[in-house]
View (cartoon, rainbow, N blue to C red):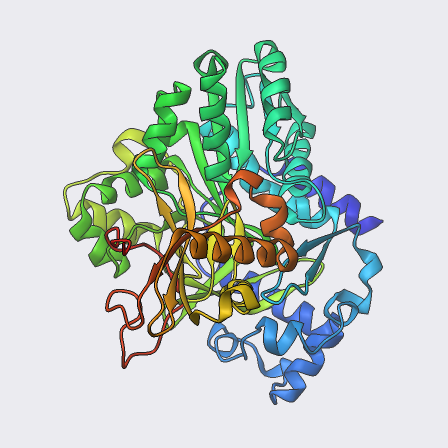
Length: 499
């Protein structure tokens, strides 16, 4: 009870904008996290013993950086859920979220009210610094799926925590029921000065477009958006801003970087959005900074709460929670850039990101391309190649395909997204509409069966993938003599569909 009261007190005293990170503060915080985890989590104690680590000898950040990495395969898989919790007790938590695994076997992520209070800071920062919700009556519409998944109930809880600090903020949670959203929002929004839609980007766009077609007056609602789960372009942001009447996209929108494993890790700020919009128009600078031509999600984060590292172009993080994570490797492609490093990089190319935003949180940046080698994200659901493989193994499809495919999310001229599966035909086999339908139906059936996120996050009308059938050894998708990759983060030019 005492630690809950202390956590609540700290939350209500905490400022909305994170203070600057003092020298060594982040390193001290992550070392304290390590030692408390080593002392109280049975699984981590055994994990360290198996790797020959004496916790008492981990005294510096250099020692910390030599600790073994946590992964789902060698930490979450071998140890029971209770052993991964503090004190070996799941019942110290008051909620459990569920995420889909690649085989359909779920992963469980307990959390407590204190975990939510720690990470409510990311929501409060957006509502305060970007939306001015501390002084404007605000309707927060939770459009993430409701249920065991982390998005909906977690977001609703964090928004209510923000309201509890005295913000004139009211939450309604229709979930990802488009008809319910379009029923309640036009009725409730006139009672508030602004309306915030929180959900996955393609779903929110679908809501906006459907509402426009039905005569919903979005501009009259002073719409804002909080998004998560997907990388989107600045053209997409501009398009949605124009359709909702947003006047300042850098202040009217914000994306969260989060995972079921640890909640919110970072968030877009007007500063990070300003930098990203500059880089969207300066592809050579973006290539130099990120090492790739595609534009990642770019957020700021508080290293005292979530401590990031990089390993071979992928991200590790450490963070407290009901299941503490220490040097957890989530396989997201990305990197970390210091606050001053980012400002200097922009200044050297003639851009001052503070000219428009003025004061900004002095927090480091993390950029995220996503798990492009392993999954694609569609309407916030991680779509795993393993799920698609099962669809192609069904008898109505397997006889005329090789089993190779490329999974990707493509965008049309109106910035709508579709799940595309490009399938390699067996030698001597020909494409055709009937085979495309069979492959699409089989893959959709298996995705719904194996992947609960896909079944519940993706609207039904978007669940059937677009199928492209290409001949054996197609050089663009199935080149010979190289290791095949089953996912693509960004598609090449539209391939011709064989006639």
